[in-house]
Image 1 (spheres, rainbow, N blue to C red):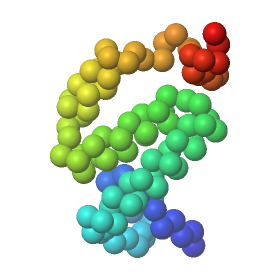
Image 2: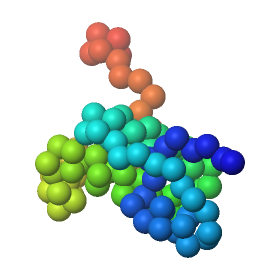
Image 3: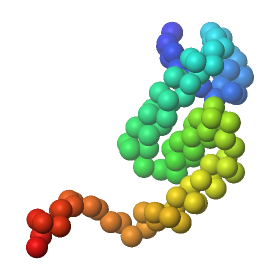
Image 4: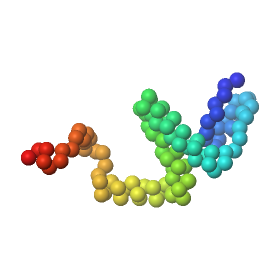
Length: 108
């Protein structure tokens, strides 16, 4: 009997039951949920690092949207914040890798 002890998507219990299995679960408190979402984000990032596919990126986004919701921020509001930051500081399209920054006196 596998033990998971992790946050899962909302329809997972239905899927498990449809497969003829019996899941055991609990509903998390708000504090537990925040902790588990952060763990889930790390888990999904690790899966992306391993598999490097867009399915994993979609999973990361799902967790990010849930985390944003904890801050009373919608997906639309989060996108607006992202766009504003991209406008002010740029994105990552130019593939710039910063090596070091010298003070003015170091390069005169």
